Amino acid sequence: MYTGNPDVPDDVFADVLRQIDDFVRTRVMPREVEIMTTDAIPDDLRAQTAAMGLFGYAIPQEWGGLGLDLVQDVEVAMTLGYTSLALRSMFGTNNGIAGQVLVGFGTPEQRARWLPGIASGEIVASFALTEPGAGSNPAGLRTAARSDGDGWIIDGGKQFITNATEAGLFVVFARVRPASDDGAGIAVFLVPADAPGVRVGAKDVKMGQEGSRTAEVAFTGVRVGPEALVGGDGEVGYRAAMTSLARGRIHIAGLAVGCAQRALDESVAYAATATQGGTPIGDFQLVQAMIADQQTGVLAGRALVRDAARLYVTGQDRRIAPSAAKLFCTEMAGKAADLAVQVHGGSGYMREVPVERLYRDVRLLRLYEGTSEIQRLIIGGGLVRAEQKKAR
Image (cartoon, rainbow, N blue to C red; front, side, top):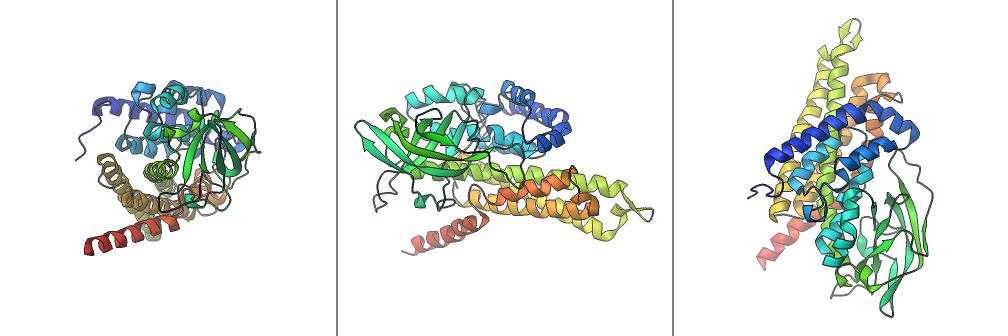
């Protein structure tokens, strides 16, 4: 049973969440068009997020973070999902898939070396897992690390790496031996962005989420010392990847709920004021039906993501529930955004109208941290294997 976060009591967290919500609604939302058209987060907004502790809200307090647990994290995610997703992306890898590798698997020395800078925003950490032929299935990794004296030499390429162009640290997954019955043979390394042999490509041009920076990263003969091997263990990589991705899936589900809530609110506001033949379109039953579907999805998604977060924190389910939450919530957000455009009619197809941006932004949620198809395989396969195990 979840009994709360002793490091951040409910009353303290309520105040933190109010501050984040106020920041989103009064400082970020008025600048969504600016973020979209310039394809960048303004420097003053970045400075404000750092001052609020958002680069390290999920990093434990002993390393300078706010110390929020995943139950609290999803409340933050639902709040951040209400505005441009590029804002959350700016500090998402620090708190999530990159930072949590260090929190969960780093040595005391590695945590002390990197986590304070990650929590403050002085260091941007990028999670370098995805590569051509190895996206949703890390077992297909081709980036390799070979032992060289007391260190390692890394060669390979990654793609779609969030915050690569701003990164100070790459959390790099590489194969150290062929997979076998003894393990996946994948290790994870801490590679400073300025290490010789690291090359970051041009910023990707994407369908949506303008202001979020992704790029290819090449590692050519990159030499790192023994202190770069996370946990000091050459077999920890696959487990670190799966653990971080499972946690991240619940966070993405929370973001999706926030996006769907925004789509719903924009739909209701438009339906209540826009007219057709002198009648508010919200009086039309078919428009009401679309809004009802949005509301139902938001309520179901919010309940599911909160339950999944509690199950994760208590250790009851760190595999099936995260995938179920991500699958349902991201698919639901896509439908909510599509309905929002439909409610707006032709206006919803116009650039600079919030629902047009939402429609493009949410599409990516069904792809990263494992596609919807991968989530279905995890859920269905996991349930069947559990039943088969009981029958033995």
